Amino acid sequence: MLRDTRVEINLSHIRENMMKIRHALPETVKLMAVVKADGYGHGDVASAQMAKQAGADLLAVAYLNEALRLRANGIEMPILILTPINPQEVMFALEHQFMLTVTSASWFEEMRAYKHCSTVNKLQVHVKMDTGLGRIGIQSKEEWDELVPWLQAEDVIVDGFYTHFATAGKADTSFLRQQHARFIEMMEWSKASGLKVNSYHCAGSAAALRFPELGMDMVRIGAAMFGFYPEQLVDTVKLKPALSLRSNIMQVKLLHKGECIGYDNSYRADEDQWIGTVPIGYADGWSQSMRGTEMLVQGERTPIVGKICMDQLMVRLHGPCELGTEVTLIGSQGDDQITFAELAAHLGSVSQEISTSISPRVTRIYKNEGRYDGYETITNHH
View 1 (cartoon, rainbow, N blue to C red):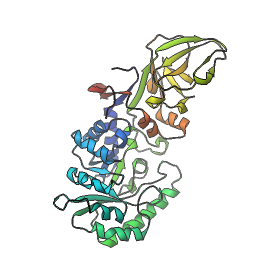
View 2 (spheres, rainbow, N blue to C red):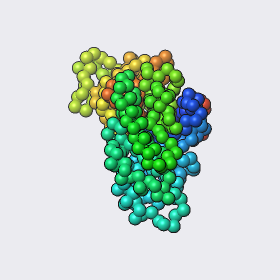
View 3 (cartoon, one colour):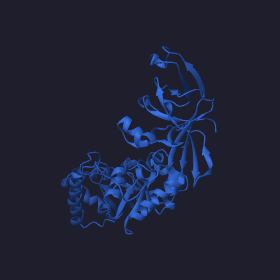
View 4 (cartoon, rainbow, N blue to C red):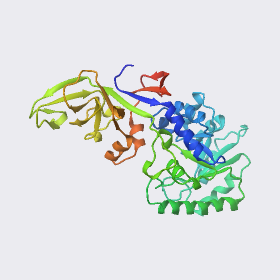
């Protein structure tokens, strides 16, 4: 290991989370594991392998390059790409049998110029409907009617028809119910067209856990796979976070009352105190917005003081510490723990923003059922 700062990923927690979710679903509901953004920062290939072991039926990623990376690493499960690809890249999708998200007739019109007539593989698509999130998807009946003739082509399989909820993690369910009603209406458009659609799906992690009745033919589990879910709103399963972030103190100094540390003299001591320097900074994904949060040193909470630097940060210790003392930024130490939810609340964000922000220069170490899995990634794990 070339750095003291490392991410520890417990693969058995990923597998167990997915198994719990799988068991909470009706047997007829398919389980899609979403491993985009390098498995939410946990490693896409390892996460896909755990999902398969837990009984997932298929995978999803955001972009074509993510899907190609999974194939290059031996992942043979069906893969849905959630963001429409460029029409000129259609042959990649056909060659590797990826399922594509489509949102417009114009995409098909342009794609036809790039699809080789000689290919025998049919184009598998999932039609994305926008019911209120306002991101991507078909909103109107007119857009749908324009798309239908393209979907009826002999070389096209409509594998799915789906939407995504905007407020599934909120206590107030009124907008979710509004989106669901809109989706039911749009499903009627689909059925009236006479198209054969293999699966209808609307529920991501939070919706699937809170409202099993919204499972339809399939659910998409991303955040919950890694232990991120609205715990206070879910009483059906208890999921475990899979990722911990740790480092070691590299320097200890006594700061006297009135002395300053950090860029722009950003911290001034109001009394004599011990300061530890930890080799992690904003280039590792621990942004300056984390100033004011705490980490665990010898089982006690210690606050970050001064501006966070590119490669290091400083903490106010309870007393002198030996060099090399372990620091926990995310995870358990002693009788306390720093949670993703706590840090996300400080940022006004979500847990998965933090996990995906941890940069590739932080070493990833994988454990399986408490044992080291036999490999680690020292630098960029892509």
